Image (cartoon, rainbow, N blue to C red; front, side):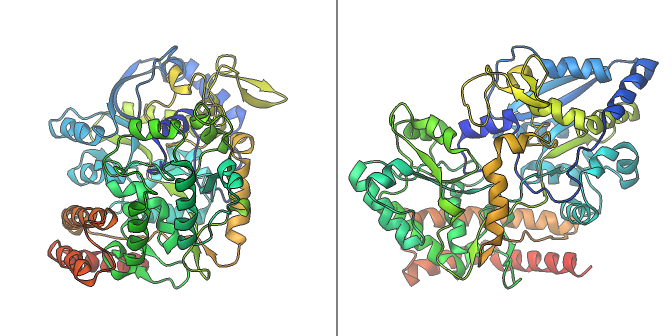
Length: 543
């Protein structure tokens, strides 16, 4: 999801099922209409005569008023399944679900699991049931069809646990590149400004806008995992992946060099100097590290925020500010140029084949329930299932126009914020749909993401443009637990000192202040983290 988007935007994206990612081979629909017809015939012959109730734990962004629970009806009609769901906010969900597992009351099914939450703990503790490869081939053929052999090999190696098994089903991203810079073109045109090409130009341009308008040029909150998510937008300008707060390590796309923990190294110093200037010049909101999404959304609605690296459509950005700024006009940067401090190496966000968002099943539940869930998941990733989770129910949320599904005027869409969301019909509340396990239906990207598809053609072919490489690590269970403990401490030290540098409590250009940071990082186990990560990288890539 992304961390840099605002809660309102994320809610729209997830509830509408706006997905990100990579589409290479095998993007044709994964099943034919005859497949679903056969499944329904089988159901009518008694396969699902027995009603099964399955407990579900769902992580949600916002509570939705359900008008008509279409998903519950679909589960009952197609699979004679009843999902007994408990919903928690995303901030509370990992802790709440861990507590349930530890007391023996954990959910039987999780539609939306993430490794950077508690999933790794659950795998290690034996709470989750592995998906065996023979089982995937037999029970989930539609799932395997969405991957090429090369893609699946990479995905499996990247997402398997230390015992070599897969405990959740990663989803396939469908757009290789979809994140680029946008800006308030109305203000840039009014003051005859060009979108900046370098960090120094960024400071100069945004200072001009702030001085002339009184607006805060960049408004974005941190989040519970790290307050630095608010400023990770600017990582790519300095050659870092924007997801480095999640990855911690990365591989340089040009030199292929592995960097185990670069945000506690001299490599990150220029970035911190830039962020310090952004803050001290009033170009960042002052309380970015602690502000809530409601606070930032209020500032944006007042007209603040004039640049964004985002996946949202410009019309969505305009909708946030239209009341305060009737003439607002957001636009993608022409030719999708990125500001960079190195003209010989511009990092853009290249999506991986997959994301760590996928369903998981509790260890120890009955084989009958497992089989029913696998049948449901195999249908959900089929052509029919993708259509249902992308657009909902024909006649209620969408209609067919010239063979293309089209949302009804009453529905919110990626280009129309107002209206009912799919979540109002019980669809995708827990992230099983788009944005989670299920890909968008074949017409969705062509309808709503044409510019992002264009990005995927234009950006990778530009001279000196490189997509960062997410490293594959192979850790033993013991080393994983050890690394988790060390990084919890080290990440806390990193966040503490980075915030001091950004907010001018310390000076990142001052050697004595920088030494304080490095000494604190060393005491927090930096050297051991680097060794564990480097050894795990070498093991994974030499095996």
